[in-house]
Length: 336
Image (cartoon, rainbow, N blue to C red):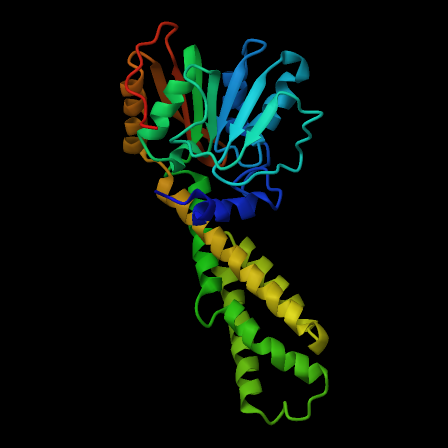
């Protein structure tokens, strides 16, 4: 059985959400997903009955609960349970102000801690595709009441978000490569600190010259990669951050700067895990059809439709909607 507390996926995403990002595609589109994705949620939410109970799967820092709160308001009586495998503490969330919203950390979508027929709406935005099927899809149906509506925004294998992610992954791996910028910075830091302190042996020590040359070569390589990349944000950020770190180092703060560089490397390694997950779990048409078939098997007769969500930039995602019949003959639930 998986040790949830020590799951590297959970740790990577917990670290990411702790930085305050509202969604998982930072830098690509606005935080609340306006445009085609916003229009999808506006259509889904329109006419939701007052007092409805909503489940948001793989909520992250609660982009959907926040959108529902801002769209429907506190007077709607909507109750939202938002779950995620990661540890969550959304910076915008105030339990006193946002009454009716509850976040649940460490929850796997394949084993939801809710009773059968608990929810009027089951939502997920860039989350359900990361789960194991058909278990998670069966759980969605199990916790949905008769007459409930399911709605999911899922990564599309041909989307501009996936295209950006593919480029960003290549850049992240370039920076993390053996002998790359981060390795070169680690090696040159102590030599620069000693040189700034006036150590007389630095000019004659071949190791200092080797570290300096390797660092300069790495910086030049990053510059070339920036010029060649369609999405150079990670490269530009890393080059500028490392330059400031190295340029200002002194002997008295060398340990702190060395630790900061190690932490930066760890954060980038976690970012590569998240990016790889997005690319692996993005759905082509065959895979989204499999999701629809799994939902139909769990709930025969639920009306399922899916379509690409597109805007000026191109395809962004799949939009999937299913309606649970008022009198539902649900299929087998996922094993506990």
